[in-house]
Length: 378
Image 1: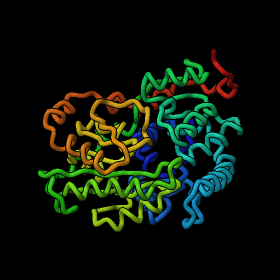
Image 2: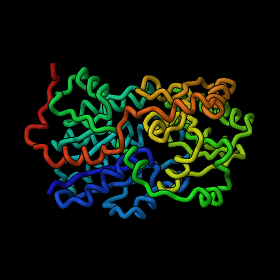
Image 3: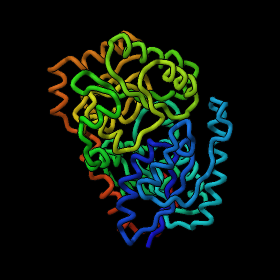
Image 4: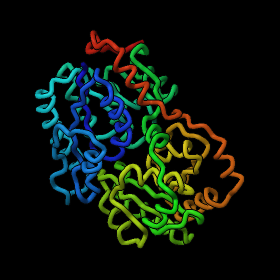
């Protein structure tokens, strides 16, 4: 039996870990050691820890990461990573896992990746090799260099990992596991959703998810104001999820809460996915717009620089932080029937919803011997 150490900080990583953990849980070859931290423990951000428990996962440990919730800057992000790293080192010593399943570009996962590498524990990294810019890209590539086995979503990401000097024999293209959730989540009747959320899916409606960009934290207020103004000026329905807590988040949250739009700190996966399935488009700067909307056959209006350079299907409409540009993007996404019909023909470059099974196959069959000693592959 292999003991797998997993850390969840926010809904962005839980949505990808969930289908993997479901398969791990069903397989007697594995035992999960699950640590929850970050905004998943914070009521202001929806207390996603409750959804994790409701989904039937046993949480082995909870590590507070964000202590001073009033400080909103890059320095506090670093203090939080240092804080959680200390707790994760202690937990790794207690757990003695066979490997760490790390992922993406999130602070707590960076912390556990660095800690495990120093403790001679093999690290398997999900979705390395992607390009976005901002601090997220630096975190992602740093994690790749501390990791021993790579589970990228696309062939392009694999090629970038090889250019970073990673050994191709330890790189397995698997797709994006969040698509597994889209494909496999049970359906809720549209009438039930309309009644609960007070919306009408027969009329234009967008999901909005806009996070701060750490390298542009001082501009967060102007950026979110432009998006909200575009939605309100067009008079369309919107359901807004609050952002993560990267530097600059407090101004975004305040503006959303004062906007008059329907907003939620977070939502259970089954409700969010069913809203997503019936929405006319996604707007904001979430990686969800890049990774997932092509599977749902809806447009994504991608605002600003947060996803700059990331591989995407042709359903993504890139716009600037400008109200008029955002409105033009919304008009094309919602009212250009030729474009909307074109979107329905696209395939998702991030896979077909079978990533979790491919990851389990790698975890089950790979030998852990000799992984720790790394060198630049040429």
